Image (cartoon, rainbow, N blue to C red; front, side, top):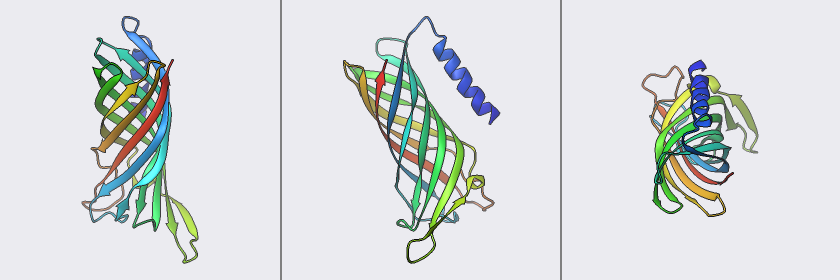
Length: 198
């Protein structure tokens, strides 16, 4: 956890103190469509997509007219539905994407880079009765606190500094921390965003 916070501090310190480059700041928010993928040994099998949201701040550091680095600090609510809605897992995460942006056309950019993610908490909401009664269980200890993904997508910035983006975070690391032999779980998230550069 300490290393994770250190990465956040160093990333944003470098970004905000970079005086030799063109730096702009912005905010963004949007919808998540997330889904776990895992082995058959995972007790939560039969994963389906779950709708969530994300929001936070971004910094774009222009290195050339066509290439930029964009670190972000986001809160992201995601997770997965299980067995066609019989239960669902909701996770509260802090994401730190550090993306390279290449401007294909004026305003239109492709982006890709690593995404570091810290898990704050995870809850399992299970259907217990035929009447639809539910119980929420804390399962934070079943998952690793630090996750890595690779994000890629595209964004379009208007003249008014409004921008829209689409990104897919493909889970790389096994997030399962439960005592289950050969059980692997990865978190994948499709994000649709809108934002504004100041």
